[in-house]
Image (cartoon, rainbow, N blue to C red; front, side):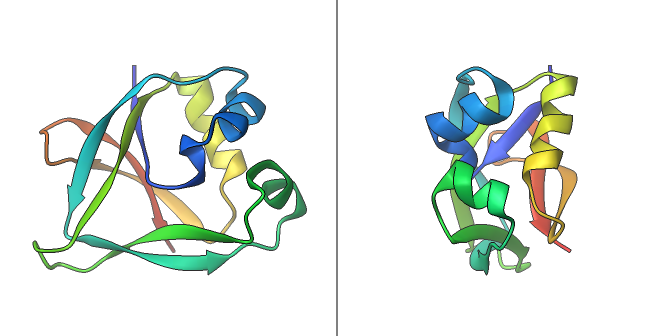
Length: 110
């Protein structure tokens, strides 16, 4: 089962229910060498689901002192595709290793 790192709106139960049809299980994890910047969302469906105009976006910094806390969610292959559809075109999905040693997917800015 793949892992998906959420550091923003995918942690919200409402977003999970509307995107995946269920509440996801996960555990806290950390991502080094990244920081968060905010992105203004204009997609009406994403705005409706999240209720937020600005969403966080991961940005590689290369600085090991930078660290982002989030939740490593357990998802299915189908749910990865559903998450791809939820994220706006400004994001791209990549696989990475987290501080815990676990691997998973993150969404970063293009």
